[in-house]
Image 1 (spheres, rainbow over the protein chains, first blue to last red):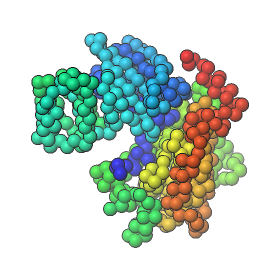
Image 2 (cartoon, each protein chain N blue to C red):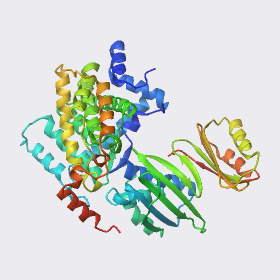
Image 3 (tube, rainbow over the protein chains, first blue to last red):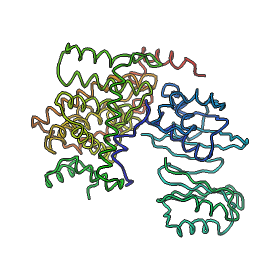
Image 4 (cartoon, chains in turn cyan, orange):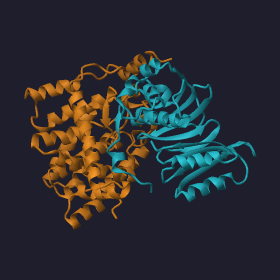
Length: 222
Length: 295
């Protein structure tokens, strides 16, 4: 069975009122912010299921915006995150939507960077503040935020996965979980690798330099 | 190596080695998270600090929540305790005030320790800190109580669930009350078997408790239930310290809790589609609240 710290049971320290609707939403925001790698200029936030029903009462709205601003689940600035976003000139819009077969606590985020490029992230809060990121742009993923994670976008051709995994091995980094997802043969693919060790900037730079790798982003555990 | 899969195993090991349960919980955590003994104590001390601050803050709360269902209950209870005009006297009224305070802070988006969940966050600090205040126990003792409570809760997470959405409120406030009962016995230097008995006695009496929050908010019945469950933890610890045992062992009570949770209908597991949430008043409040500003 998975490791279970007593501090997951007596903890975390968090802003109330709900581990799933508040702390979990903050963590989805934190993960999306790390995937985006900068402060979003526009945040379009779509609530599905239970989140759509009760997002105001549980502060899911301020929690997700706080998470996207980089505040942790115990940061008291979360309560004022809508005002803080406004002061920063960030455009924030909330919507309700239906996502077939999705977990009842699901959020879709459409984020726009300063240069106009966008990122779409779908995440669910699965209880006790635990989260799963299930989609990045059009790629299916299964990210928990518990492990150091490397996200790579690359051309679907022989050898790239082997090069990436051997680079990690040479640097003493063990792969805990790995997912490769592609839409079409030869098209852009997504590789998500969750590891047991931290991945250094040098390793990320090395992977980024491989021919066929379009992007390599390192996400520290949240 | 202790894995915290069973309370019986925990008690047995404590008895064999003649050590308190909190010592074994610390060793479990050292193996699980690679933290040093001192770091584990420091982290629990940080939790304790947040609990104390929430009690302080909640007792001064006067502004109602957005729904208007919760406002100055903790302050009222604290005032009666302060004036010495309580019915029961001693630890219980103080625990009610402290538990209300923490649960109120949670409902108003303040900082709390989810223990085991945010919805049940007032019970453990309410019960443990009231006992500590009246019995004049130091922080080291309280931290040992918290470690014991956390160890017991970890077994529940493994054997059953701590989520209201999966097991109803018995899994949140019920378990918090049982964890607190065990923690109090540890603080009062009861035996490991008494810790287990207190846990079992408290949880048995909370079995079947449903999660039916009005308007889906962590306010009604949650905030006042935190106070009641804190007093219930003290009652269970009192019985256990008097040498009263639970006929059904703690691990079997946890299994029963899991089974009952599975059997509960979805409408009574945090969906706000049954029980108090669909009473005439519950529905009216939900309509008024949800009609306010949400498109």
